[in-house]
Image (cartoon, rainbow, N blue to C red; front, side, top):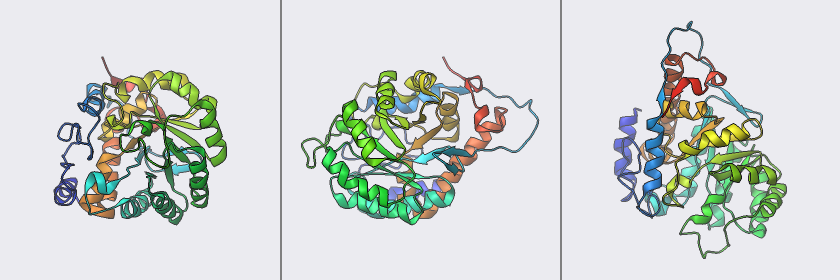
Length: 339
């Protein structure tokens, strides 16, 4: 299944808000919430996309030909490529009725695991969302990362057992979800977390813990202080704060301080193997792609996800070949050009 076919199929299935654009750049949906858009005027999602495109690749083909190795080991698991599917929740609300949170994760988690990567799964006010997500992860021997909302500690304890039963190799919390308008004033309560509160949550879950929503060195310091194993440099795709810097703009500074101290993930507007290459050059250990995986599921189900993973992987290999590197560890800032 080609990516063009995936896009065309998705347009028929994905509901009224997402336009299933050939290149998901935040412009057509802009501030469409419900839907895949961003908060306010939609500036942050667009900036995420644009800033990756301002970084260019330094071509170098005066290098002996050899095997290209794209494998990355994270928390004891080896993956075929250094990218993962991002967590998406409230599928019915934002993307239409062809899938719901349960059936979406059934497709995504298995397809990613079979293709040699892993999926982050979402969470929701409905407790069945986390239950179904963790059930899907258990079916692939724990090769997935459940992402829990920043609920109060009592709710976290309830969800913690589901996470442990799934045999998941890591867990994430999208602390930036505190800014989602449809989570405010809801039950169970969710919101910002102090270092002390986050430390209690990390100790309760007792797995490699990724804090999603870090955009500053100060935020990374707090995550490390709380005991996090990793951070996800993310502004929630622009959905929680308008007029925010892009992830491409802040990643380098954060990675310079914390590379080797925590696993560093990044998301936000990464749409190609070339963008993935740039994120690694700026210091990320792996990247997360979210919205395009929704298009892949709605446009082709299991085969659509597998095809999309192969597309991004092939683009990464091409970038590595043309930039004169053979392994991920060889991708450094010398491989890119930026202003």
